Length: 375
Image 1 (tube, one colour):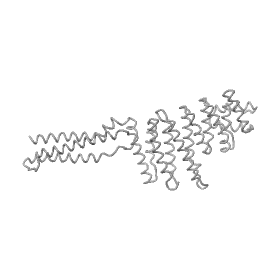
Image 2: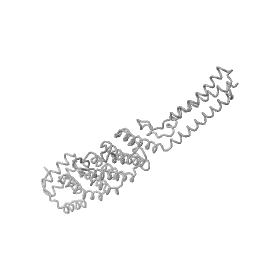
Image 3: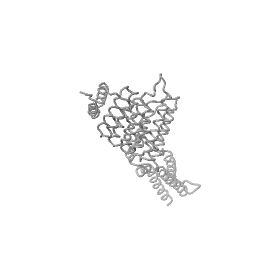
Image 4: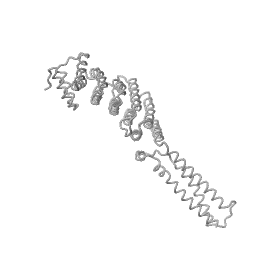
């Protein structure tokens, strides 16, 4: 009778142990969002090997006692075999329930925890090899895109900001350029490509981070190492423009002063100002467009010593109604612009090369007013 009881306990223990082996998969299927299950090429779940090993030792002890009890029934025990195996089974069951609760509790807030795991692994990788693994940034980017626009996306931004601070401060400013570009790009995608409604505060936070990067780059800039004119700055220019265009599409016009503030820090940015001004006009955000027009004149002069983008935007004002036309003429007068055939040909050629064909047509209309023909 006692051996029958022991054998029953063994069968139940094996069943419990097998159940535990499938526990992580079960918890992931129930609690982890679909996009996170599909996301990662790496394993960001905590290692349960220790849990399995502890329960395996208890199971082996139970099976060993049952084996001895069945093969060598005459063996004498200080304690009852049934009591020993019952105690071991109770311990196995208690630990299994404890691990089940732990894994279910751990499953809550998966996004924030996985973001922390990725961030810590990136920082460890930098400290060990001074290199950044692109795969980690792909996962952070994915999480930013599929997170909700508010606090969840902010978690991604804060993790990237912490990585950024470390990258910028390592080796006295001799930072990993590719790594910095990855951070800039991931920040951009997190706030512009989100499938959830965007958060204006998150966009503002990213633009503020970009402004801080530009200030740091200007501090590191030397004639021997002109980092301020490198790929990092161009990436910030592209990303800032994407954020500006996304903000206009989501009707966040009050963000534009910060956008213009960032872009005016960047050399050769008049082309991006032109794009923003053009979209603002298409969205009937003429206040933004007029601010861009004011900025683009100075930027054109500094960047190219020409007025290609300024004149292109003026041409769009010129054909957008009588009031917009009057504003364009006043801008030309205020900036003391004396239009010449050379200016006209330069603007036409520039916008033709950039495939801004509508702008080329509007330039023809605009210059015709001044009896300058672009044939």
